[in-house]
Image (tube, rainbow, N blue to C red; front, side, top):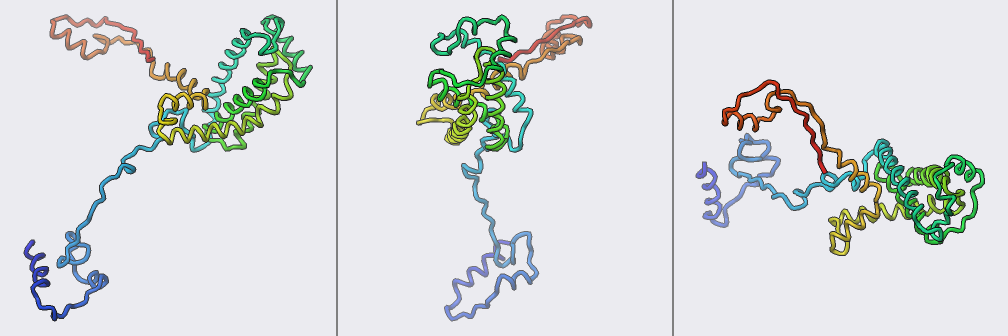
Length: 293
């Protein structure tokens, strides 16, 4: 077979320059009886297929295949994820209120009566009826803290696959009805600034937080070449997602099982017992707990 390929090639170099060449087009070759097992066109002109080696880009794993859930945006709207995040926000909100009862009155404007847990229902009803009012809270609380938390609400919906307008709606509902007329009304009258600033300015801040998070992830999780700065920034850009993941991750692989087969269904233990000559008893019963932290 090699000679069959090499002879025509050698003749082409040895023949005089005045040799007449026959012009055979690709289309003509396709019309001939060619053995396609060896050549795309004809056996007289064998073809060789070159496989391009896999590049780093082709070997790279898609980021969304390896990233934790809180850094991934759903391709479609995921209501269940929003619901889980909302439960996490509820728990964090209760913790925040408990923390604010420990902060000085100069910062929260909550007096001793506001901090009292007695008559919570009556205080909530009275505060809702009295508002909304123009509050006198510190500017840092009104125009930095509230927009930030509005942005936190916003990013929850964005990660669940909702668009900008839908995410603003979620932020508005959570900041106005859940927080301002909900949790916070147990301690103070709803605020006009908070109702306006938190969802509207929070949507602007939230979209910036979301896009910045995407940029950091695309940069390998680094900020200024530092993984620590990157991971810290990612936490503050999406705290609810991180905390929700940490809490659920504790119980993700935990299990409880009742074993009643010999040797607790432990094959390794059974083999060791057999080698030691220990008699097998059918009455082995075990309760197996598996916890992952």
